[in-house]
Length: 518
Image (cartoon, rainbow, N blue to C red):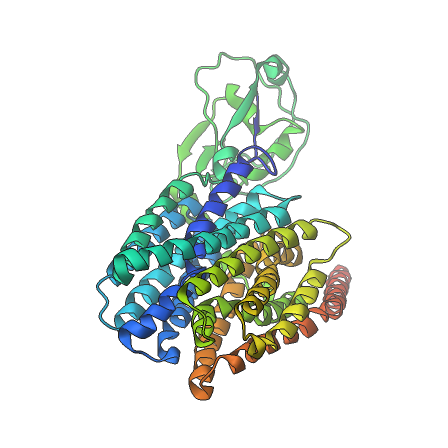
């Protein structure tokens, strides 16, 4: 009897449900963060705090986000499913907004919206990108762009909801309503079926049963495994036809005793059977015993493997980290936009329109850049170079926004260009390090991005307090975008350096092998 393992659907079937769930989580979670600038203005007035102190809410939020996301991506994702992490993160985010309704000062908000909400974000959002990468290959760029576009769509809807909630129920009532909305994440998270669930499914071909009973095993090999006892070798064996009394599926977490003490790796056992699956030997009397020791050994091995820092040896990846951090800095305009617009004399209704425009254009920009990145003739780095150059140039004209329509043009272009790095980083990084090392690489990216945001957000607020306007802060954001352009243009140089390093390592290995044979 033949059994074949079925892998999870890739670029088809349930993959689109996974994409819809990830987009929903991005809509509910990241969308609320994009519109949080409306709360920023209210907190300034409610607690009579400075811009630099109030901005600590967002900078420390990124710090705790990284402190949680780093171990989740590098270690935790190997032992728990994305669904479990997303549900737990949604619980923390819901609790953070609910507790914020009792805030009497900025320090209390730092405890709830920075610590609790930051930790919840670390559990909630990063696993969605990991599971999305496992369900998409050819259309990964489009899938990541569409998933991140859900965040932009949330940035379009949330400002309307938050403004309405603040006007009708006050700031505390709006925070309480947001805590209830976060409970909808549980529904989306429940759809994140782990890919491992598909690997346990089998297909039975009964027509091959008789042939397999008489199939000789003609290969002799020695094998070792952590938890299986086997004879010293496998000579030619003629399987005898016997009634099948009971059949069990052997997994890597079980022991097999087949005679003499020998180590044998279960995952390689199919090599002994020519092209016959291990599952076909259900007619042989095998004594299987569940082993928890093997499971523990594998967990510790996975733990050690997860702490591999080999991705940092790639010059291209390190350059990508630095480049992405500089290109991500202009995105913090969403935090200061409402306060900046009010400083320029815009009314609350006009500010709401501006926030909605930048949210919609962010959505449109990410979809367009994600779609373009799937074209093999277009390099993702070139897309970012063009958008960041346009963004850096645009930010230098912030002091000339003297009318509402000028502001509309500014936020339209700014929103379209600012989201391109976030739509493309996942597909770019998976091409650089590979899908297997993507969780670890993403953890380092989050750590680098967090350090960047933790310093740039308060620094931008400090520039405003120091100069009395947001003009210098806008120039600072635009300058970082222009710096990222220069860094992304160095990508070919980094690739050549990696090729030389790989060639040198391969040459050293060959020389060492030749020396050992002498």
